[in-house]
Amino acid sequence: MIVRGMRNYIIILLAVSLVFFGCLDSTETVEEIPEPEEEPEPECTESDSGLNKNVKGSVVANGITYDDVCESEGTLREYFCSGTEVSSNLVDCGEGFECSQGACVESEEEEVEEPDCVETDSRRDYTTSGTLTYKWSDYVDTCQGNYDMIEYYCEDDKMKQENHHCDVGQRCVDGACIVLDASCTDSDSSNELELGTTIQYGGGMVIGSSTDSCVDAASRTEYYCEDGMAKSRVEPCPLDYYCEGGACHMLCFDADLGKEFDEPSYVRSDEGIFNDYCVDEETVMEYYCSDDNRMSIEKQCNLYCYEGECIESDEVHCDDSYSGEVRLYYGSNLLDSATDTCLDYRTMRDYICITDAIEYVNDRCEDDEICYEGSCRRIYEPTCFDLDDQEEDNGIYVKSSVIKTTNNSILEIRHDECLTDYSVKEYMCDGDSFRVEFIDCPDDEECRNGVCTYTRTCEDSDGGKSLSPGFVSIYDGGSLVTKEEDGCASDTSVYELYCTEDGRIAHTTLPCPEGLTCDSVDGSCK
Image (tube, rainbow, N blue to C red; front, side, top):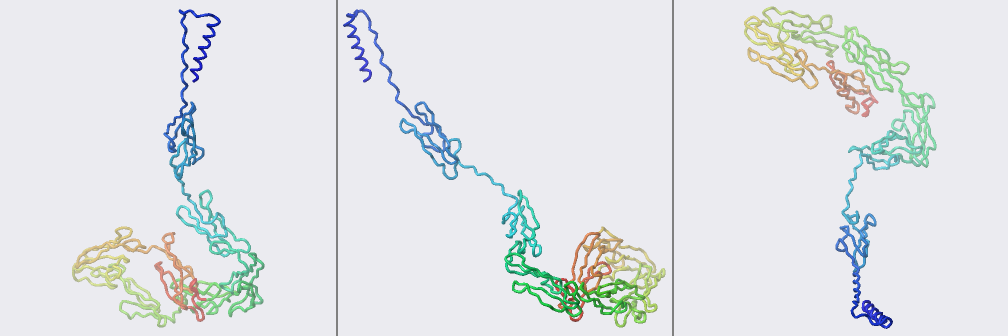
């Protein structure tokens, strides 16, 4: 329509020209004006073929490019063509996807490093009992007495601990400081004879405290708790006790009334009961009282110590009427005994009675004799003698010899020896010849000079067979191997541990004095 109008306009101009200028020369060529080209229709193109949120696309419209772009971490603006025009939508990437560089892509899960230190309560929360786990080990908030606690907490992924004293009006219970409302505590509630203090709480605060005190030398004012309230009463100390410093103390009592070395006895005091005992065969430990304090002294006996007393010579008699054995008696009690023995294959030790005491002489056997089973025996045929074959322990605790003989003399001798530090090469008889066995020493022994020898030492805290609470320790060199404590054998007797002469642990049962019972807590008579 526009082209046609232009052509008509040109024709009119030519007509006007002819009118004013005359006719044109027929020979002139009139140049024809070309028709203008048609303008292109507008276009819109897109690279990702429509709405595809998983691919970053572009839209070109009217020479302008529009790229898909992230509006937020999970939202995409997607461009697309709507006819010849450009349009866009906001697209939600959805769960498990995130918007990145103009497209929705799968989210990458970040690895969260597990902490080394984790706790159930909030750091230093003293009012809550918590458990802290540090590198697979658990630590629980713990009470230290009635008013103190250990609080475990995490700091910079490390385990820390703090000793905390509960605030006034609080008490530590199961690892937490709790408020005690209208309550009462008594420090000597387990033993009212001791000095104690009663504290009264109200509204979580201390509103008063009272300490036990002496009324006179034989009675005291005892403060105690009842139904959460502090109360008091005046009461006498038990018989054989006296009051001092607010507590009832036991009077020191000596059953033999002094330093009586020839009478076995005991001393009773606040510290416990202490029995006289024999330090060794000739020394007694005597307990006595001095100014209501327990004291002790060692004394060398003139002759012999027996069960905590020194024995005089006129009370002892020696009997050598037994074959190869001598016995020493105190009344009907056997004090000691000795059996003739062989020191080696040529020497016999003969025990004898001299002035109501056991003595010995060493006798040398004749050339045609051998010492065997405690006596010198004549050699009269070819045979084999094992000098320790009577030992129940196979002879591993005896340094001995095995001897092969002819008709009247010794042909060959073999001596026991150590194969290693912990085993014995033990010689024995096999008919009239030799054989050998290799024997391991017990776990707590070593082989020394052909004999399994106990090398550990024993220490008794209460000095021996005593009713005092104590313990026995075994040492190997300077290292503690084991420790065992005295206890109760029954309601009225003590299971008493002590050290044997060879340094081992042994036990016996001791009866408590009349009127006393065994305390299962420490094994003492009270």
